[in-house]
Image 1 (cartoon, rainbow, N blue to C red):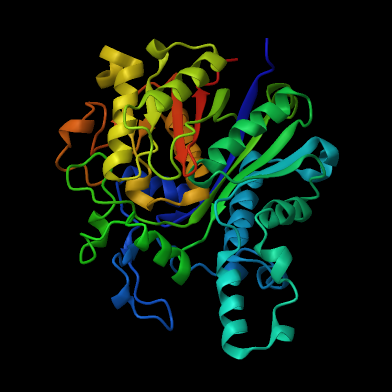
Image 2 (cartoon, one colour):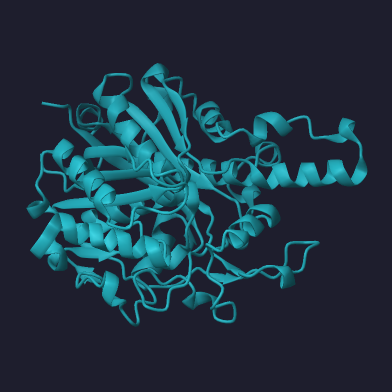
Length: 418
């Protein structure tokens, strides 16, 4: 029997709150964190089709991090550090008492250090002074910069990995943390998802792809509306989620509180299209089925799904079709919500933030609302989606995350029972 793995600490930086308490209170209230982008200095917003995003306002890294550290790392790594710091404190995990080579760090990131990357390349082409490129440019913009920085901050000398599978990155990171512990490589894994890519170039790229919502530029809080008939694209977000994942034996030894158990995980590729999922939903259903099989549970035992639900016309319909395909007559009895309706699509951070929401739902028995679910689309209507808080006894939950490049991930979380 595989060794049991649990979640003992949570941390979050999001458009609806910095810190788990602020995030969760806002989520239960159904509060939207989507706001208008005023400008991409020096670019005005006139040339952008979409003008809204899930932005984190008034984030001052110096408030959370030493000033010398905050100044030398990209915004996405700042988010990762702040979230992991909270998660470690929440878990009451003291690194001084841990064997450093038994603590790993696995980060999911979709884009990496885009804030510094865009700034430096712009200055280079404007000023023609290659000698003025920031000396930390290369180590800061690499995708693995956040995992290295988190490990160095806490002296974690175990496996140090970065998973980059676009929007499924941090769900895969969570799954890899599960496997890392089960294979005996670590007792604890600081697992993080982080992204900060609301930048002039990245935002323009998503606009050109026609992936972003543009109908609600004058009403930003209404723009992210998964499963609703009025959805017209996803809303970019930024942030980080962190989870302390450890073996049950290790957690018991130090008498840690336990939010949830990670019971299973599946990773697949549709090998179909870089952006669009297969419209029949078969591959998404297969991913969920494999995760449940790995967890040793059946579809009949699933109580709750934290859906990928990006608010795109095709994506939401495919996920709903896959849920109906797998769960059949039970599909309408499962509680379902979409965290992206509140914070937007945080890209590489989405899976981790969804996992934080799922862990809290299991722990508290409360499932946050899906915002803007005003006019359910018949092609993806599921009775378990609600605009209000749902109070449920959750024994088994499913976290979905699907990314560009045909990358699918599903993670099974369970109520911990000794």
